Image (tube, rainbow, N blue to C red):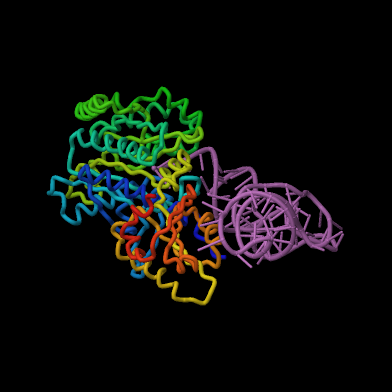
Length: 439
RNA sequence: GUGGGUGUAGCUCAGCGGUUAGAGCAGUGGACUGUGGAUCCACGGGUCGGGGGUUCAAAUCCCCUCACCCACCCCA
């Protein structure tokens, strides 16, 4: 047996249906706010991520799927999408537009050890708002992040889910070096107590020590200098204004002084969406501002930007966990059309073909709301058994008895009611499906 | 990449050196030949994740490997 590669998934019905609906829900919501779909390649040149996500980040350091193509080009399966979106904006010369709002959804690849909600091929969705330096853009992104999740959870009938937005500012190129220096000076005193990883981080990226889960490191971090105490005036104003807007709009956020992100392109605002599942904290999404990203990719460009990215698989886990009935809620009305056929009279099949054709003809009235199934059975009993097993809502059937009386039967399997219709009307049953089922 | 746990029927699992590997659920057929879900009876189904080793004898013990789950690391 050839199995699928580690950390990948087959999404078979009905999980695939749920994913489809979630994706639809996301795009439906974001389009109303003026965000439009952007699609970029699944593989990119390796340089794109080395320059943007950062050579010192774990993603670039050890998690990328790298390969050479037949001409020896160094390519990678994309580990995230923000860098690609910014690259696309530059390459397609979109930067002079003042309405640079995009949403994306698609696969990303990271070579990690799989766990629940963490896969080597995962699906990320997110939005990017480019070209706006104002704190209003940060506000819009955070507002949309929170309310997109609210909208999805509401749509899938999920109540009582608690998710929190953690937020911080990590400053800009002016003030961050000072802060990093202060952090370094603080942590160097504890160098021998820090875990091995953090001892390395001391020189590579001090900020990430704040993110360490090691208990000793955590305890040391408690009294570490906070980035917000070292922000320059502009960064401080930006952050204060943002927090004011969020407060005025009753957006529930937690000011997390030690929140940092593993991708190097962020500046000023960073945030994460955290939710609780069985006493575990799971990150649903993360994001922030990345005003230097365009410049990292090509030094002749400066394009401000702000966005967030969320994981589709993690979201799906929550929806399934909080609403186990979800696939039933999403299912269309199922109708089984059956011919009870236990003799040689093949003429009876013409009614079956008739329904096939009419379903096709009226597809616009039926789509999203009805699913049709067809079968030929030797007895009514087996037809009903099959319908029951398939969780069919209505069965329409024609057998010898019906032919003799020139009728067909419609039975509501949920309440057992049954009604007889004249076979002369068979051509109208799909066209008038609503009336037919409403008896 | 590190540490731990688990792989036995379609599903959930029992068996943990000793006949021919089991149960429940699901499936198929019948009792019941035109009105379903119930009940009873019968039946089908397994390279015990894969490979190697130890042994008279391995699902069971050992080694390797693959996959999943959990905690790290990191992140969506």
